[in-house]
Amino acid sequence: MLLGEYRHSVDTKGRVAIPAKFRDDLGTGAIVTRGIDNCLFVFGPSEWEALAAKLMALPLAQANSRAFVRLMLAGATDVELDSQGRALLPEYLRTYAGIEKEVVLTGLYNRVEIWDTRRWDEYKAKTEHASEEIAEHLGALGI
Image 1: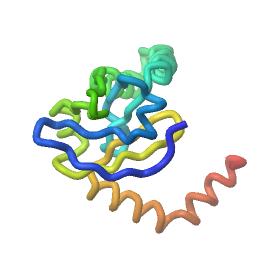
Image 2 (image 1 turned 90 degrees about the vertical axis):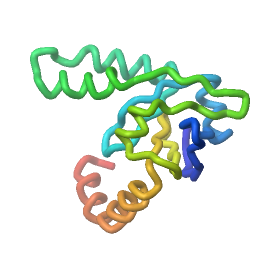
Image 3 (image 1 turned 120 degrees about the vertical axis):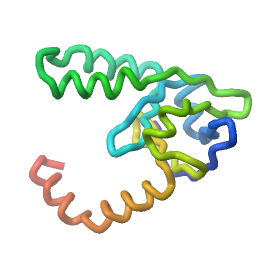
Image 4 (image 1 turned 135 degrees about the vertical axis):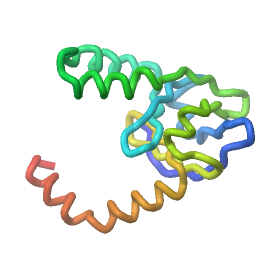
């Protein structure tokens, strides 16, 4: 189970340290792809396989389905964790997420998200400010 929020720096080679708590679940490698809200999604192999199967089952004839599949699959890359638990984030993914130096890694049960620190702080403040409204909508869904 991937939980928590951790702040790290990206080194000059584009590597980020994956928290030890996350490495236990991810093992020696993971799949990183473009996420929603301009962050990066990080999946362990089994979670990625389950998601990819669902993506491939989406209707090819629907433009939104094709666009989402392209976002997730075309941007995906395998990453290996080095002996210090660092993963190399390709430049195109760092650019997509606006990542330069400081990042926040958040554990969201079955995936990790990597955010540029400034973007994360802005997103979190906005979400916290709207928490009552969000809770109302989720209440209608039975949560």
